[in-house]
Image (cartoon, rainbow, N blue to C red; front, side, top):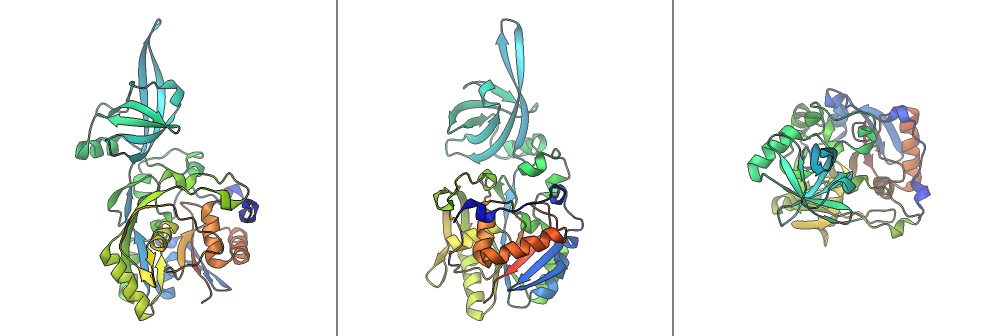
Length: 350
């Protein structure tokens, strides 16, 4: 298929830069087979039933965006340069891979100071990414990063406004546990504790898995034939308990509904035989039309960027023509798009 098959025109004013509060007041487009209904996230309590299982990604977003200063001696004295850093992932040798702007103004061995407590030395450059070695490790590093760092908002929000303290709560799920993501599983941002309690009282069950969402989730697709696209890799974990819970729900006839494309990609990566098995490691699963879903019976997700891998994923779930109808309806009804936008619940025909 061609990249243009997943394109659409989105009015700029439908790109959300702040979430709706309370979280359950966000709108929810229910696409149940060929039927389309306009609801709110709080209405999930009426849509889902006893025996359904939501699969939730419990990754925790780190405040991965840092702004610092590099100083260098010159014939004119000390000169400084502003350096912007987005942390990507820790390496086994203790360094962090990072996007550094402007990388050309930083030499190997030079130090960037981010705060009185936090600094890093550029150890090297690899594939256009800097390798930073920080002056702190462990809990000391976490504390200094929490103080100096900002949440790594998606580019389409960051282009409109800077991250602030509100984002440290808004851009984090209420069940976030395992640190490591540099982007949030944003469909999950709609669910607060009251919503979880109401769903549990209805008999809906929850399973937690971990996929550390990487900055690669925002990388554009640059090939015309999507079969030529190389998917980014992200680390995930499905515990034995999580696999057992999902398999038990499948055996009893309940629906498995991941909340977010990250949770869906992970459980489909862990599919084995006629169920799901414990799993840990990197996944670069690329879900496009024609993919055979083995675990997920539906998906709760936000509205995605044109020509993105996530548009290809939802098209694989619902069918390309049906997704075009759903997105046309969402635009016509002024749904809010992307990470801080409204949600959809996609339930394909049985």
